[in-house]
Image 1 (cartoon, rainbow, N blue to C red):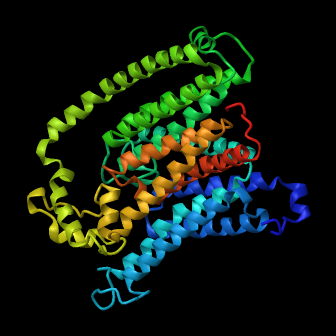
Image 2: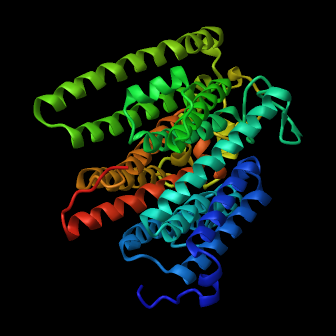
Image 3: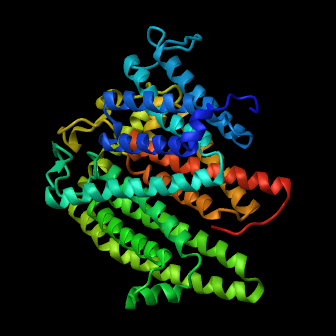
Length: 470
C-alpha cells in the first residue's frame, strides 16, 4: 500500500484532503437519509453511484492504511459472497443448483436489483475505513456526522410540529400522528433518532470528561455567567439530547424506544466502567462501581416505567389482532418451504402472499417481514443467517478485543458496541436495517469504531502502552 499514488501538490496546498473527503462522505450519508431513506429505486441507485465514486477517489488519493487491510478484506469478501449467491439465485451464475429454469429466485429481476440494498451499507463502510485513516479523521468525522444527523432530525421534527401531515413536501399516507423524520415508516425513524442519540451521548461524554459531575449540575441549576466554551458545549449537547429523546418518543415505535434505551444504558455503563477502571483500583473501584450500578438501575427502572404504560396500553388495545403476530405463522410456513436455498433476494412480497392468513385481514401488501433475520432466511436461505451471524460476530469480536487491548479513544469503540446492540435488537421486530439510509448510517458509525479499534490493537501490539481515554 505504500506505493499508492499521492494527491497532487496543488490540492494539498489549497485544501485539507482528509476534511474534503470527510465532508463529501457525510453529505452522501445525510442525503441518503433525506431521500426518504433511499428506499426508492432512483434514490438508491444514485446513492450507490455517489458512494462508489467517492470510494474510488479516496483509494486513489489516500490509499488503504495498512492497519485497515483486514477490515477491507473482510467487508469485500462478505459483499462478494453475498452478491455471488444472489446471482446464483437469479440464474446468472448457474452451477447446476436445482431450480425452475435454472433459477432459484421467484423473481430474478427483483433479486438482481436487491444487490444495491446489500451493497450500499458495505460501500459506506469501506469508504469510511479508507477516509478515516487517523484518529483525528475519525473524531472530526464523528462530530460532523453527529451535528448533521441532529440537524436533520431537528429540522424534520420542527416540520412535524408545524405540519404533521407531511414528510418534506410529500403528504403522509400513514403514521400521521407519529414523527417519521424524513422517512415513511415511524419504526425506521425511531432507529434514526436512536442512533443519533447514541452519537450525541458519546459527544456529551467527550466534552464532559474534564469536569466533575457536581460542577456540571451546578452550572445547569444556577446558570453562572461563563465564557468557558466547554461548558457551552455541554449545555448544547444536553439540550440536544433532551430534544432528541422527545422526538424518539413521538415516533411511538415501541421497538425503537426500547432498543434505544437499552443501547444508551449499555453505552453509559461501558463508559462509566472504563473511566472508573482507569481512575481507581481495589476497594475504591468496587465502591464506585457499586454506586454506578445503583444509578444505572434507577435509570433503568425509570425508563421501564416511562415506556411501560404506553406499551401495555397498545398491547391491551391491539390484543391478539396485532398484525405481525397474526402473520407470523404464515411467515414460518414460508420459511419452511424456502429454508435451504431461499426464494431469492427481494422476493418476500411475492413468496409470502400464498402463505398469508386471510384471517389477518387482506388490506395492504406485506412487503417486509418486520424481522430482518426471518426475512433474510426466507429470501437467501441458509446463507442469510450465516452472513448475519458472521457479520455480527466479526464486528463484536473486533470491538470487544479493542476495548480490552488499549484504552485510547475507548468511547468510540463503546459507541460502536451500543449501536450494534441497538440495531440488532430492533431488527428482530422491525425492518429498519433494510432501509438503505439507515443501514448506511449504521455502517458509518461502525466504520468510525473499527478504525479506532484497529488503531488500538496496533498500538497494543507495537508497544503495549496505555493512553488516556477520550
